[in-house]
Image (tube, rainbow, N blue to C red; front, side, top):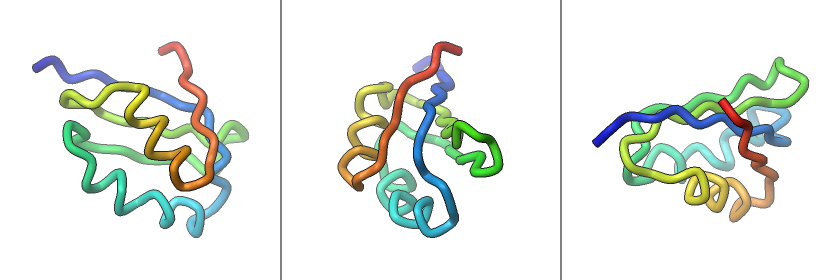
Length: 73
């Protein structure tokens, strides 16, 4: 399976916000690594995929009440 990297503009503004999605992202099947740049004005979430899709990542973030807008890499 090809590894891909997805980037999203989010509204994960602080460590507290990130902690609300951490368990779901850590346990998501097909996701090898992720991080959020909360210092960036667009709060960029970067995900390294081993099978998970952009839509699946966005659905995880949205299920926790946050926004996740895919960026074209």
